[in-house]
Length: 164
Image (cartoon, rainbow, N blue to C red; front, side, top):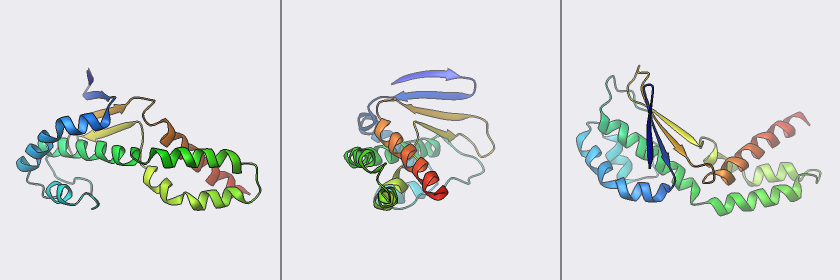
């Protein structure tokens, strides 16, 4: 993991997402024990629950670390379905010119799109409610290429479909 200080932001580049999550899980457990915010304990028990954004007046490092871990876990969770995104991309190239097929493609992959909608190659975690300081996590370009390409094509297809 490379780390560079840029202005008020800590930038980390993660090449091996699963490796990072496994190697740093002990710190998540420590952070959950340190923070007064109960949502992280609940999320650890049931990772299918929705975690709402932090509204705490003052954020401590334990809470921001848990939020960072959660955001990276979300990316990893979507990445476990990469084969489905590749399949959707291959199907897209065969339906792009077929009349009516694009609408069906959009419908078929709507759920997959919902999962990737908020995924990006960069995660920004604010260190305070009104703070300009942030931790920035960047993923290596190759890691997310299929997910981001699917997202781009889906959004473009929605635009085309809404015009026609």
